[in-house]
Length: 376
Image 1 (cartoon, one colour):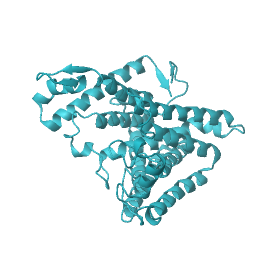
Image 2: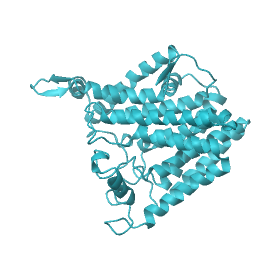
Image 3: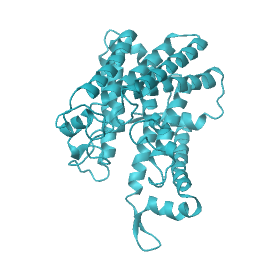
Image 4: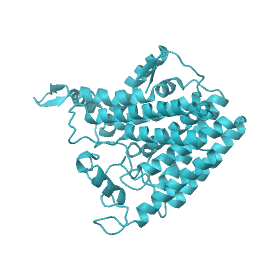
């Protein structure tokens, strides 16, 4: 990562805000005081379905796509795109490497490291979406995004699963889970399941479509000069995506863990409408009073996400003795001593998460004031 103290180009404030509120939400849902006491909207759906928490990651990938269209338009017009391709390759590798580092830290046990994860998926989606944006016209991008969804639907619903014998959507016996076990092996998948990975190999295909839909949104925003038309089409196409996702849900259930095609359309549609709201309120209407903390997150989104995970893992290494003489890590100790006694279990867990968000709000706002932007 490299630090910059100069913002070279004017930024779309609503996009920074949307990115920032998404990252702040990531930190909130990833750091409850107790995983046993969480309000339902702050949990992922157990399997099929979609909670507010399930929207966070696809929103971020959708934003990645929008950002690609804004950042790479000038390079797209060049005959020699080698520098641009080198740049996106390096950035993708950095993102993948940061994710792998977090998976390894602090034990650095390569025999059981989870190979794929959130940052790794961001890196993959960023690279492929950016490469397609540089090489293809909008119509081709749209066809590619749609084709990936159809191909994934066919694979998941019509290809028999080896060792099982029939296609299915169950957590441990679907085709995506089988491929994860075959290629990654159970030693290198998500530790909560050990038999499949929510950021696994096959489900990466439709996640690319999420990024590409963001790219198409960004292309439209760059092309159209009339703010009214921009906002109207963000809502019209967003609403169409939501309806299409809900209809497809009847035969291919909305499912974040499998990143189903219906989930892609549903979340991309919602993302388009939310971005439309942000754009109208902030960039068109000019209402910016409440935006500063989230814009600060948006300017250093990957830094905020990485540091939040790194700090928690580091603090968890510090062991202290509690009131009954038992050893526990300092995060758990502080939570049990200063939060749990004064609130209900769910509220205590939520307050713990909010404290983490506030801590990183302070860090991000300090970086913004100093004009420090860490580019990954």
